[in-house]
Length: 265
Image 1 (cartoon, helix red, strand yellow):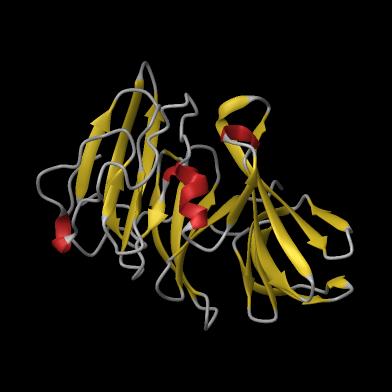
Image 2 (cartoon, helix red, strand yellow):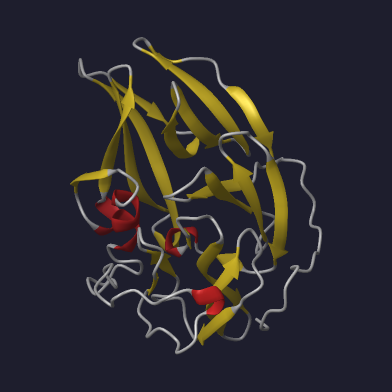
């Protein structure tokens, strides 16, 4: 059985995070994760392709912005703002095609729209960000500099490259640095993934091909790999034996309604 793909959106101002679990094809589930306690609760399933690198969680963990699309005779795409971890749209911006879309939250909690003008009325008292708060992707890269800038707001430092060649790093403790690169899979612009490695102060590099998401946490790292979340201890000798936080492999599609009224997608 193929493990589901995982991506994690962390809140900049609290311990909340949203886990996006992709699979089976054209389905995604969103779950709320309290990184401090380890508790994970299901939000909602969505029958669409959600583009994780153009999605974000507000600093207080209350709202999400994301871009998703469905494909038949033509592409039906939309940018949505929802209440995390639900995917039912409170604000909906339809578009044709998959270029641009989605957005991010500033450290102050304002909403940036990638390649779109903010709507006049945002839900729950949210305020629009300045159009220059993040890059819009005018370099031809379909998410532009948006994702690297989002990660820099979370303490990562860009050390090289741009677009599909972007490389970032973050201190991980015990003399190690966590390195993050954005990679194309099968040279398809819709299939973007993260690649990770650990680099020691002595020059050793340990590639981590199974890691789909990773962040320093406590005395080690929190990692998404092989369809599960893990806590990985870190010593001067390198990563230790991972401990499971939550396994998502056996999840089945469960249609649920958000506990609020939204607009249709």
